[in-house]
Image (cartoon, rainbow, N blue to C red):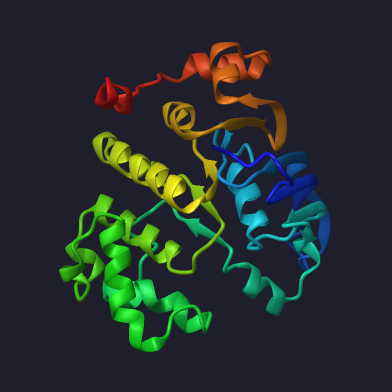
Length: 274
């Protein structure tokens, strides 16, 4: 159930652009607009999906919201505060509340760290969340929470499967006790059966912890399954938005209709629950 009070995250008239530079002296000669006039809200306990073809601006929006890419214009409010105006120190504090699960579970984990140290890494950066003498015990509790054997906390990422590595990434994200988790193609690198397991885990965590998800995916079956509301992006512009049910049953915009009809939709999770 979602909170219908003030939004946790509010994006207003967001524009993101990248400079075009000349080959001589690298002077700026123009700009490539990746995202233009995007607006949406994310409430506590809600999942909002961003869907569109490659290059539509989905990941750019996600990375701008979390502060990895600067906004050229517009406002991003987290709990009522415009985070586009924050200093680097203030952004560091804000990132405790807003974390990201990355697409590639093979590239997003440090191969030289054990699972315990990967999970505890955020506690080194953000002091005071967990006492140091509790790091090992807390890391094992988080492993157990995401469905991993806590006895494997001394193992390294290469000793786990892709699905298990993504669970490690989820545990690392949960370590900072965030309010918003941005899932940037978080299950696209996994086998279909493993996707279903990870999606079910994300839903269970949301129900238990009241998390909000900004969910980016090109996979329409995933979007339909997990999202409450969906924004359809085309070349950096939102062409249609609505509840997942509305969009999948009655798409209105020609681009949405073409997108939905062109991509086969497979729903392994529906088979599991039937």
